[in-house]
Length: 224
Image (cartoon, rainbow, N blue to C red):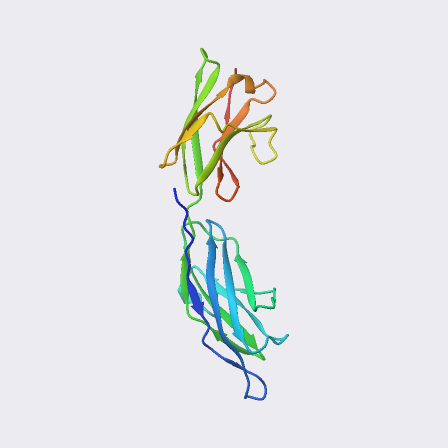
């Protein structure tokens, strides 16, 4: 399944005027949603300005309700001031498959200006499920399952002494040559029962997505 990045723009056309009412400080701020996931989004901004005074603040306002902008939206201020007048902001704690409204803002000497409202929609989270079929004659466990979400670039199995599987599990085994994944996210594979011991009867399958993250499936136990 392909994972696409949605690119959207917000142009801050307002101008902020210095105390002498003559010099235009900020001409525009453009926002570009460069990465969108189920739970966070990264917004890149670019500023066109004559200068960036130390008392100038700018960033992103966002909410899942358009009516919240600008007064009741969540405000995330940009903290990096790069020489090329660019910045990046990560919007955290988002909900999957939800549309968010956002706009740029800047503030100077108590004067706030806002950009055009745009949207992005968070993606569906990756879900991995599978079930085992034990083939005692071949001493193998055949797994069939599916995943939904980001692209899978690899697949493997995790073993542990408890039913809590994570990156710190007792053993992680990538089985590159013993599994297949089709274009619909349905996978099948097999592992030898000799991989299991009575001390670590719990296991689950996982995928490695295109961001090099392991996404674990349901945890099962075997009494071999």
